[in-house]
Image 1: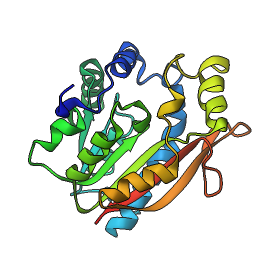
Image 2 (image 1 turned 90 degrees about the horizontal axis):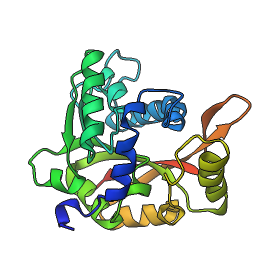
Image 3 (image 1 turned 135 degrees about the vertical axis):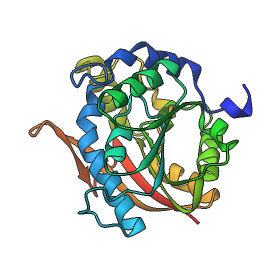
Length: 247
């Protein structure tokens, strides 16, 4: 595998591509992402505005910011970021998924720059970004060091990185894989591999070695009584969000 595609796990891309038509179906194969999205959007928006000292109440608070969403899938995060005024690039290695994203953006009148590429391939181009998001992506890449290294290169100095992934705990195995894939059937079986889950401490350490300082870790917890995900400052056992800045 070439350095330009070191982080791409071909089998993972193939699996997501096989379900591409379901990206915008809230009751389909990507139902958990649709449930996650409201709280993810709020976290990303708030941390960008706080870091960049932007008016959160403005109609398009992210106007003028160049934002890269790595592993964008069908555009569940790129479209909200574009609506908030961001100059958004969506990156995914799946050609069929990017085509779904392009078609949906066009159907709702949004201008988003979608690219079929890996993060490493994008490094070879001159553009650098104020904000990079990589949400529910880390647990699907083949080479984590290559992937994080590319992110570091793609961020401008003082650029903001926002990530979300699954913790590597016994609880995440039972809830993130056994329950989500085999009991509740929220995800296709085989979507996740527990050995690719990352503890926050490891992710923070790997980012620090690249000159990216973590300043927030927040848990994502599913509340069955409300049937929604909520942010938590205490429970990081399954899902968590991370915000960091490049020195």
